[in-house]
Length: 295
Image (tube, rainbow, N blue to C red; front, side, top):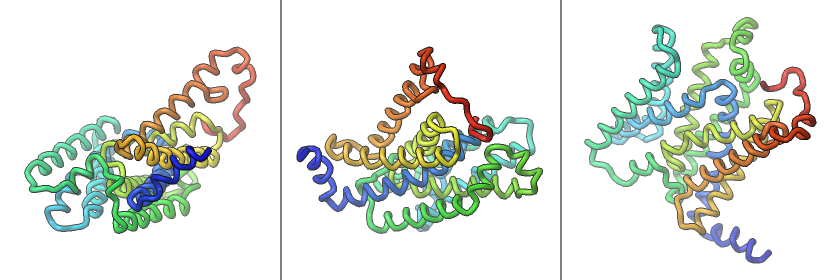
């Protein structure tokens, strides 16, 4: 028992580990909430697109001496708007448009990245540097995460109806276009909040895995939100502590733990897990979803 307690308390005796743990929990919480909406809407690729598209905005902001979060948010929102415009004004499907836009912007960002006299700070944007988070970074992440969570809280029912059935949302008079771009703006802000912690590459997993895990374990959206938040925060805490003892990168450790949880849920989820479905007894005991439940 004492050995287990030391495994937890020793890493937290260092200031940089305390900051890493706080920022990991903040990032995990905000990504978990948005992850549920993205999974329900089928927008997992949109998170991938925006996370890659922020790179040119970050490099340009660095060149102009502006805060990197400003450039990242502008580029992410620009990618979302461009994707929506091209989808509405062409015959190309949305997933194809997203692939073209985000790959083009990411390529543009890489060209700029190689031409700029850069320091290690920009490299950390690509791959994350949770253990190098400063108090200022922590405050910035907390503010952005708070804005995202407040925005989702204020419009959670409208966003849920829009993601679940946009045609019904339009029929009852909800501003569907505003909800569309509002959700994209919140997604861009969440990615901005996650950049310094897990980087552009790994933020995609943070935005998908918690919602996907929760979707397989729940029949209601409220429960889905709770499970996603618990998975994201729990994996953030465990991954941060494990990374200290393994002397490994914190962001990848968190993502690996989330992937391990996903595999376990995929195999053993009650009534829905691959191995549980293979059992006749488990199939017979699977409860019927109530009306209005998640599909």
